Image (cartoon, rainbow, N blue to C red; front, side, top):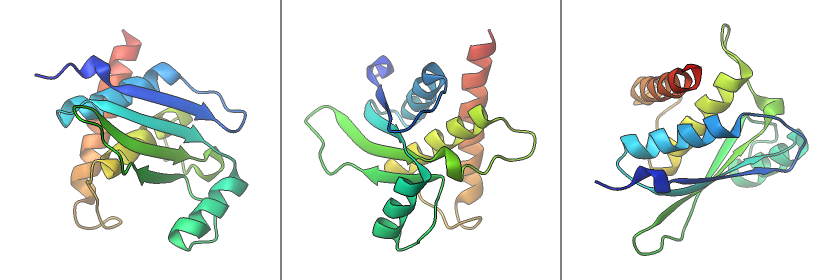
Length: 147
């Protein structure tokens, strides 16, 4: 069994934003634990303008989005660096009854699964399975937090 405490989650702020970094790291660690991997990921918070430019450059969509994920092309022997998850608070679409904190964790889990190669069609094939896994991970993180 691998040591999942070696999961490294680096958080970078390119904008003024406040969030619970401990919860983000716990969320990343839970995804890695579930997938039986260890390694690292970078979570970057960016402005709406930067996200719009990135979305246009990489997806051909000229609008702000909540998340983009960029898988790493480099893996070193024995360690896995998944890549970057880029988040834009200006693009967050917070579901009714959910907090912004929950949404950040949801996007981190979602981005982690994409970096690990789990993809789906929007609300189609594979969506429900991934969404259920994301919610279960967030629930575990929030339970640990409330103790």
